[in-house]
Structure formats: structure tokens, C-alpha cells
Length: 117
Figure 1 (spheres, rainbow, N blue to C red):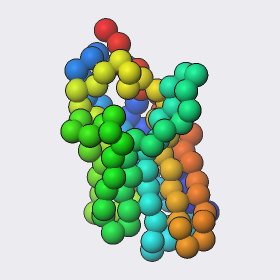
Figure 2 (cartoon, rainbow, N blue to C red):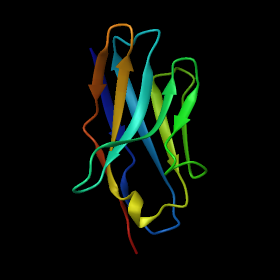
Figure 3 (cartoon, rainbow, N blue to C red):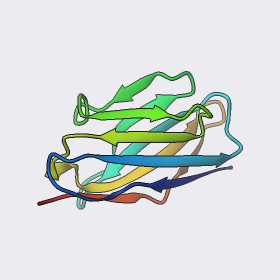
Figure 4 (tube, rainbow, N blue to C red):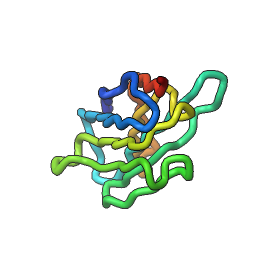
């Protein structure tokens, strides 16, 4: 199993920045994808950005040019740097781990991001 612990959410003014962290522990596969999703009130959970074990990244259109996903050198912590935040970025942000060879997935508990003046 893989456990995920997110941190870094909070309240920020429009135009501000936040950096989310997701620390993974446990039986991490050699091939995996880690991603950030978000869910706003009354809306479906949506992909924000993803990074694979090879380092390739993928972004939803909503965050392109503003959000950057990265990881530490140990490849156990994934970050989401969010710049130029907008009120519509307000949501609970979740970290997800997925191992395609076993189809195993794990979710973090979520961290609230609120963009408001």
C-alpha cells in the first residue's frame, strides 16, 4: 500500500501563489503516476496535473501556464506550484498515486485551497 499526505493549502488572494506538497510512503512501484486533482463544491473531481515515474508531465487546460508539477530527487514527494491564482481555483485539492501495472491507486485526504479577497 501507498500512503499520501498532502499539505500546503490555505487562503490566498487572487493573483497570489501557493505550493502544495504530497508525500508518498509505502510500497512505491517503479512505474507509477502521481497527480493532483481538485473538486469544487457541486462539481466533479477533475485532473489538474500529473507526473509519471519517468518525469513526463501533463496539465489540464485550466492550469497551463500557471501551475507546475514537480517532484523531489527521492521521487517520493510531489509538488504543485500554483501561481496567478483565481477565485475559480478554489477547491479541495487531492493527491493521487496510480500504479498502472497493478491498477492500484491511492488518494490523499485533500487540502483546501481558497482564493478570495
